[in-house]
Amino acid sequence: MKYSHYLVPLCLLFSTYCYSQHYQIEDKYRGDLFFKKINMNKLQKDCTYPLNYWQLSDSKREEIDKLCPLNNLKFDFQGLYKFIYKEPVILYNGKNFQLTLGMFKNIQDNQNIQNIQNNQDNDVESGVTIFGGDIFLSIVRNNIVEDQVFLADNHIYLSDFVEAYQYYFISPEGEVYTLYLMEHEGGLTPILWKHYKIDNQKMKFVLQDMLISITDGVQYQIIYPNQFNVILNQPVTKIDHKKLKSCEDKYDKEEYYSCYIDVYNYYNNRLKQKINLLNKNNNTIKKSYSKLQQKMASDCLMLPPPVSGDEAVAPYLSNVMFCLIQNYKQEITNIEKQLAH
Image 1 (tube, helix red, strand yellow):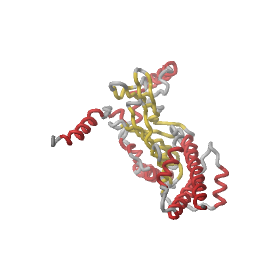
Image 2 (spheres, one colour):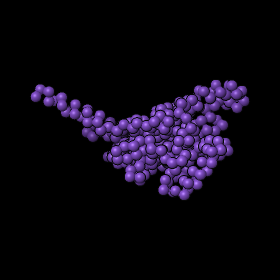
Image 3 (cartoon, helix red, strand yellow):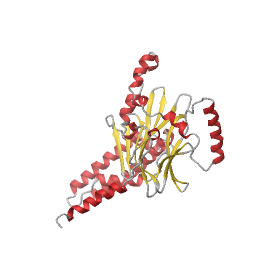
Image 4 (cartoon, one colour):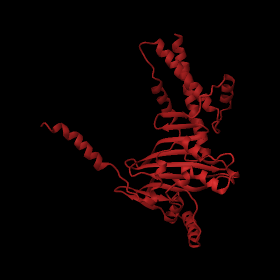
């Protein structure tokens, strides 16, 4: 009997070990470990060209390029296409489902797939490399796609001067990481990093957190279900009331305004001040800023997240921040009413 109290933790330990999912995926499909953890501000700094970059010699430019870790990836993303261009590849064959990697979002669109495959077959036979194309990771059960995420594309044409890419990593624990970035004359710019977890009970890719970088010196961190954090790489600028009103008057749900970070910081700081003042005047009931902020973030993060791309990210971020600002303003009004009594 004296050993009985050890049995419960031991059983829990072994049951966790036995029933935890482990995804044995070949290295040629797994992606690059670099994308598991990203510091967007540092990455942007390392991958931004100096102003005189295009006036430098080829050898000098090569030295600068080596400073950007995105130019030194070990995984051959371009070579990945030769494995999956004909049909989706099974990465993991589990008891109840499969993970597949393919180039086509709608695998039921057989005619379209056949046409693309025929063109690609001709390209491969003629020695032409498949340079890019959307790659999707799918959860398949009984030959039905239960859920799917946009995983990668080695070449996304945006304009004659701008291209985009998306890269990924799949961990043995079933965590999926993606990074969308843009390449332009100023260098490589990370835009959107995402972290998913494979839920093999619900057959879903569950988004865990995101990092967004579309404003210089500012990184937005979203941790589901209830955390929205602004990470500044520069001092907070004080916004005057005229500029504050001007920015709020310009708000349009279809467009992102850079001044919204100033408006967000203004109302966020004002809410903190009001809560501190209320708690100072009230000795019985204390209001928690962090809990209140998480409750508001939980409501605002119900908005569908962007799939990829700066065109999708900007309005999403604008809508989330607008939602938070409106909530902050309402709570500030409520606290001011309480302070007035």
